[in-house]
Image (cartoon, rainbow, N blue to C red; front, side):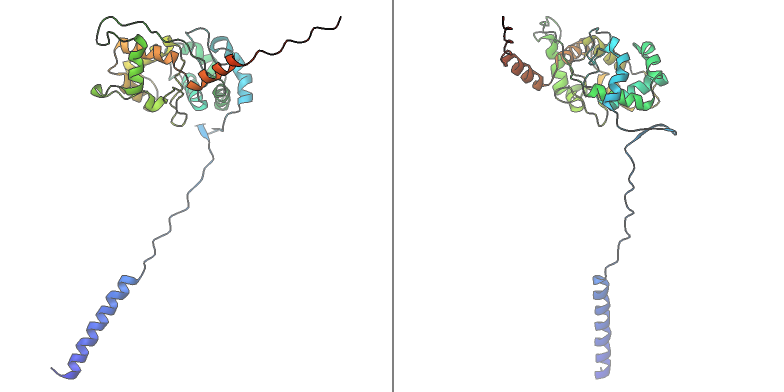
Length: 274
């Protein structure tokens, strides 16, 4: 092979190697991601109705109408009406919208609808904001000993406590506290409601409605979650769970009550001079 031909082959080889090296080191720019579009934090009821975070002070005025049934501070004295104190703004606004549209039509819905009809979507958020600032009370759970059945030997509320804290994996029932929190105060983000301290009779009726699995809601996503959770619950379990919720409350409330009880009594005012 001639010297010139060898040099030519070497040259072509070097050129190919250089081309590969260049290809490997050349950076191809990735197209820029479009900037994230920001939007105001609003909830749109219709194309013409937008809302913003509720005003608790305005809500307090509007809630005066609600006091006859739900109590001055949202803690109802009559168990046929639910407690609203401590409930999240978003959940209350959503339920008022369902009453107003007629999509929630069980229980006391016929009583609620005229009041809901008087409220704009923003009014509903204002009312919700007010109740969210109120402190929820709690009742007493039923500690009667269960005599027969699969839960014999347990206190009635303990059946509900077990379901609330641990669920039942064998039946595919999740722990209630996964959504409603260990102390039952709920999760306002996905609009999981505050359930602690609720009247047992009210909770029982609602759980039975979920278990029936029938709704007229146009967006039944949250209803369907509860329908699936309650589908396998027995009457005894629903009753026990409702009783447990009635007595459930944050531990901080016990601490506050203990501190109040331990506080010294205020000094008596001095007697007026003779």
